Amino acid sequence: MTRPLSLHPDRALPADPGVRAIARRLHEHTADLPLVSMHGHVEAAELDADEPFADPAQLLVVPDHYVTRMLASQGASLAELGVPRQDGGAVETDSRAIFRRLCENWHLYRGTPSRYWLEYELVEVFGVDVAPAAETADAIFDRISARIAEPGFRRLALLDRFAIEVLSTTDPATSDLAHHAALAERGYGERIIPTFRPDAVVYLRRPTWRADAQALGDLAGVDTDTWAGYLEALRSRRQAFIAAGALATDHGHDDADTTPLEPADGERIYAAALRGEATAEDERRFAAGMLFEMARMSSEDGLVMQIHPGVLRNHHDDVFAAHGYDRGFDIPEHVEWTRSLRPMLQCFGFSPRFRCILFTIDETTYSRELAPIAGAYPSVRLGAPWWFLDSPEGMRRFRESAMETTGFYNTSGFVDDTRAFASIPARHDLARRIDAGHLARLVAEHRLEEDEAAQTAVDLAYTLPRESYRRLSA
Image 1 (cartoon, rainbow, N blue to C red):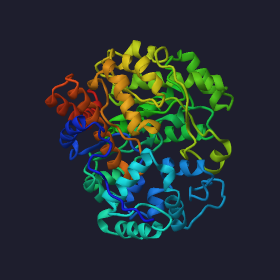
Image 2 (spheres, rainbow, N blue to C red):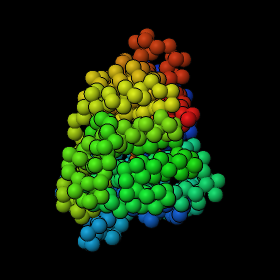
Image 3 (cartoon, helix red, strand yellow):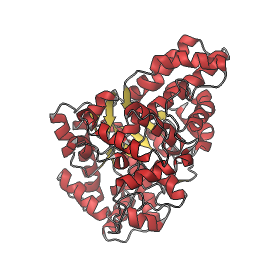
Image 4 (cartoon, one colour):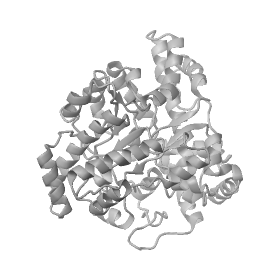
């Protein structure tokens, strides 16, 4: 049976009628605010090219590992879903067939944030009015295809349609930033900005590490045959990112250890890595030491430091060998924060020129470690729930478990984390509704006045993300 598709105006708001009424009023204050998207994975090359989206499958299915991992969990192979392979193997190239697979399995997404985002996109962005199903798949595919063929549906035009005020990309330390330079020439230099991510040149046993370290030096014009030269090259590239508008760095480490390296140890481990002789323990110690060095550099140049450890990446070797990184097989694991961050915070925790935003996908750490840390150190902000936690229940649990200790104003406000460009407004919409509901409950319990709640809602949606990612004066 074909079902109509529409968005309920009270979606994701509290069920209690009295609290819902307050939440409605609070949400009105944030619904039309601009979007500040400070941690994204939309590629700068795609924004620079500004070409039409290929088709509905390439827009909504193939690049979104939230979507593909659900289908994979029910027996579909990533190749059947059109996910590119790096091993030369065949993949499905019929985008209509890929999109049908999503529609035929629409029931799998019941109760998931993916369904919330996809429904928002289908209705608000593409004007679809029937629910995905086997019998509606082709009609929806054709409807979306017609919309994305319109000039107003290219990426740069969608910045205005989505009211995106700032969009930050995530770029390796070895990026030459040519696409950002081209975008700046077209007037987007302050609106589309890079973020410096050095992970590839920090983990010594990655297959491409030596080539990446060499590329880092070539771009910086610095010899990276020594640890001192390598550090200087990193400083140089950070300055290049700042010149391109960067406000932050990004660190997806295995753990949160920030134990510094003695210079002799740094030199020894770095030399061993160049010879291809670094051990797993060398890599672990080097990564910890480099997280400390990145904090030192941030205290010097003012780039805001984002840290998000705690993921066993590429959990299945064969999937990684076939399809590479970021294919939905990154699985959360426990991270210890309290002792791990202590070396960094001992040195920089009270520095007025240092700011660090901590993100986690292990929500057991919110009330025990992260909220107390962010609630004590002026240099620390607690990042928004993301990845596996940017869901209605995950966001609610975050507010309920962390806010009493950290306070709203020691958080980053909402920060989305997406590769799926068209889902950016859907994610912000959900966050604003969940925050309206949380604040409405505080009003209903006479713990906040409604005008205070309204101001807090605006700050969480807009003011805090801008303030948290303000590059501190060096």
